[in-house]
Structures are given as structure tokens and as C-alpha cells.
Amino acid sequence: MPSETIERIDGERIEQEGEFEIREGITHERPVASGSNALIFKTEKHGEDPIAAIKVLKVYRAGTGEKEFKTLMRAHEILSQTTTAARVPRPSDFVLLNLSEAERQHLNSFGAHLLDTQPAEAFSMEFIEGKDFARIVYEEVIRRASREELKGFLRDQEDPSDLVEDAASLDYLFDIVRTVLKLEDSMRVDASGVPQQDTRILWKNSNKIFDFLSARGFRVHPSITKQLEEAVALLHKHGIYHNDLHERNIMIEGDISQDTGKVWLIDFGASGSRTSELETYRDDLSLVR
Image (cartoon, rainbow, N blue to C red; front, side):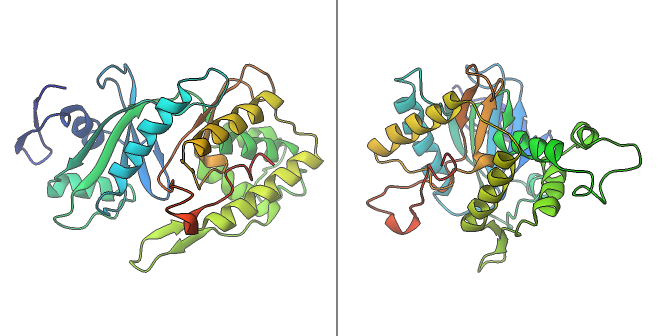
């Protein structure tokens, strides 16, 4: 991508190849999603993509974002060779952003923890139109819960489906599900004081959610699990282990109860090699089982 010049929030002008649209996208917009480790922004145009997603890591740990970007590139290349496995978004550009104070404050106001003088790691990728699997299953839990189980959330004459329609955020849906199913809090604070998700508790909670749904008649079409299984098998064959494959890191386009649903794997921030990082290896197919 050619170099372009842009005016930062504080008025200073910068010029760096590959940086223009990423900086523009994150400094003048609100994030469309916020996870434990990153903010996701949506921009109207980036490179070949008419709509792109920009991922900005909330904490600067040198090389972490670049490693994830390179893994995403490899995973995209591997899964693009088949039409029957789940896919990953097509990555575009990785940049290390030297932030102005105003830009740092802007990102920190949405939950980043970027300290003075620290840059931010960011990369752009294809934007996936669809729902994350977490929202789908949380909505199904609420629809299948009894009025007694939803006591405290339902107003008089309100139906459980009204809670789904009124929910503005995934976190609000999860608050309801966590209360109904008595899920554990998976957030932990690491040694540097930064909140992190405990993957073991996430998976334990996932099992409780799917046990509840299975007992109440919820079924995912076999083609969805088949896409997941094939993608995981292909990635493992090439030495890529996602290590964090729970319902928040799966996107679905279409209806998961039909064979037309399309599956996407996202967030490779915890990924690694089975041989070189055995201590961080997790069962990528535990969610499918």
C-alpha cells in the first residue's frame, strides 16, 4: 500500500506505509467489539476490502500482535485450500502504531491498558458479517429458560424473547445467562494488573451452557461441527493450535440449524505450536464435543 499522510487527533501529521487507514479507523470511531485482549474496529475501506475489521491489542507486549497476524496469515492460506472447512478472516496489514497522547487516551477509554510512550500493535483483516456463536447460544439459553429462572430480569407481562430483542450488548446477555446457570467468573488479574480471561473456566462454563441447551432440545446442524472439526484437523496437521476455541471465538454466517451456515474461526492470540509450546496447548475440539 502506498504511503499516505494523515492528521492525528492532536494535529501532528504522520506518514507511514500501510498505516493510514488503520490509524484513521481506530482514532475516529468507537470499537464494534471488545474482548479481554483486544478492541475491534470496523472501517469502511481498507486495501482490497470494502469493509474491514481492525484489531488493536489492549496491552503492548512486544511481538504478540505480529505473531498473531502471521499465524492468521498461515491459517487463512491453509483453510483457503478447501471449501468444506471453517474459514478464518483474510488478513491485510500489520502496523506498530506510535500513539499520540490523545490517541492513547481514546483507546484506553474503551478498555485498553496502553502506558505512556508505548506503541500499539494493530492489524487489519476481512470483516465478517454474522453473529458470534456466543450471542447465538446465549439467546437460545434465554429463550429456553423458564420465567422462574429469569426472575429478576423479566418485567410484568414480558416474554423471555423480549430480553433477547432488548439486549444491546453481548455482555448483558451473558449476565443473564451467568445468573440463570450460576456460571463462574472467568476474569482474572495477571501479575501486571491487567484483566485476563481464565480459559479453563471459560470451557467449564461452555460445558454448562451446552448441557443446559441439549437438555432443552437445542441442536446445532451437523454441518457446523463438521466445518469446525475439519478446520481444526487441517490446522493441527500444519502445526497450528488455536488454544482458545470457545463460543466467543467462533463466528456464524447464516442459520446454525441449517446446512447453509458458514463458520469462521477468530482470535488467534493464544495460538501456538504443539511441539514448541506444549504447556499452553488446549483441546481445540472440546467445544465440539
